[in-house]
Image (cartoon, rainbow, N blue to C red; front, side):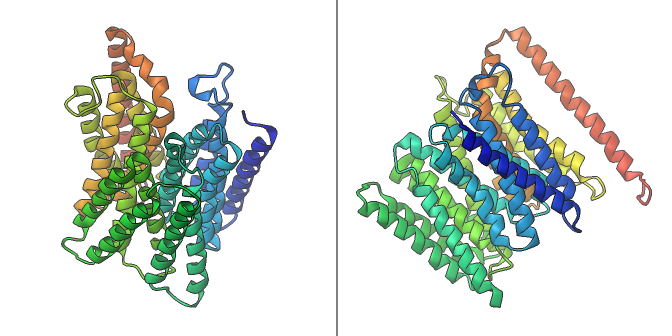
Length: 464
């Protein structure tokens, strides 16, 4: 259970996040409405975790709500400090959320991670456009959180992932210090980061751990090196995402799910460091390839975590099962449509499209689980990954809009699928009624969106 000290830490983090929102209000150029939206929605999410009669996923003493408060506060502080003064703080503070959860709530850490994921998705959707580095930071936070959860399930050292995150933080601080005199060459963070990963692996090996940590570091090192070599090719650079697929397969073969999680963490941290374009010499296509690799591996780790959390009874969630296939196809096409509509927002009224896109990206997979069991949720996750990678491979600018929408569905499914799934066992008539209500909500959303879009188009200064 969570004691008073733990709640005090959460309150301080969330309170400082509110201070960051207020400070953004009085400064020019800060997305005040998006920052305040994150704070208010995080408060709403926390409020839903303290009902009078707890639902199953709330029985861990409110750890999910604790994770929402801590992560939202750290994200808001990191965004303000990162955009105002120093990018390094924008990275360090959000990464502290899973570290605090592991230190303060070791027994309820899984539930805290669910809350951290929800807060991260909220921030990414609402502020991802204003703070471009947030996508790699979000992937770093999620990969660190999920790798630490899988450490519990695999009975491996719990602090290994945190040590690797510490290597990235130290590397970023060194690069920021050197960057005061001009842009830093790519080889310095590359060498520092993988030297830190290697030292961590050697240290755990010398401490008596027999797991193949060095092999995992070597696999990721080779993948990162090959990716950099291929990224410069204008014609074939995007298809070098196959390098990350090879890293995924090799790491899974070496150490199953936890090996894949550690490789995802290392790739995400590498992408995070290399994404600091104002500090080092890296090309946009190179950074995009690293981000695509981090997204691919992190989504696969999340899917692995979903499968372990909800072990499916036969028949499994294979794509030859209609429910899984429906979820896959709906995500593959639907997320692209949603991302296209979201990207057409106007600067005068950006929030209503953002909130609508975020609501449906999180609510649609949950509704599918309620109608078609967990198989549809697994299919949706696979389809979301396919939609994001397709946008990247074919050079579609929508890729940066699809990434957060794909993540939002997964981070909501992980804690809430167990609440929605029992509804799929209801009588057929009940499920048909629920499906009709869902279709009505979609139609209502489409009509209201069309009306608001037309109103924007005919506003003063706009052509009808």
